[in-house]
Length: 213
Image 1 (spheres, one colour):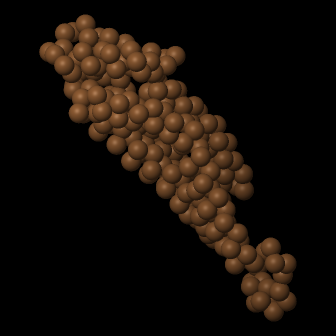
Image 2: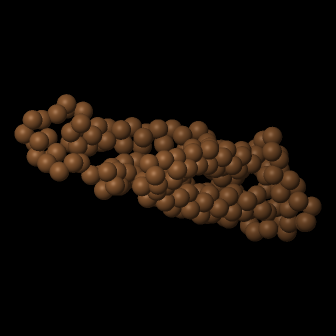
Image 3: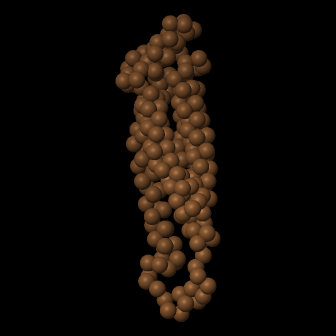
């Protein structure tokens, strides 16, 4: 975003009744793809959506088509996740589009929009982290239900023992650090896609507050 140009136009808009030309200038500056932080976040959002579709679609098809359809419940779980993500992406995209609109008092509306966007991103990080253990446990339960062990196998397992990596407690213990690691990966991921651009907008708002205080 061309901060100096935007600050000049914004100062003109705030200090006097805004002519239509000034509002058009602000709108044009905010929508400029080469420098707009909002436009970059919109492109990143579309890239996220493509990546998720490319990842989830093969998984859904795999569990629908393989194992004689016995594990289709896992596919439906991923479809439910896709539906939730679709609502999330739609709302975030709608917010980003609103952030490029100059129909309202720009400074106050942008402050509120940035606050809402940060809430969306915080939800995305938390939900994306919690999803890992939930989906892992759900998948294990589905497999256990559809492919139960042979009669007496559980008793034999307890008596004879088995390799450490086959024990459920081992997988639960491994799931804890993996989930923690996913949390920090999600933080890095959203910061790279959105955080740096949000900070640019917040920097602009701080400069505006200092100038008008």
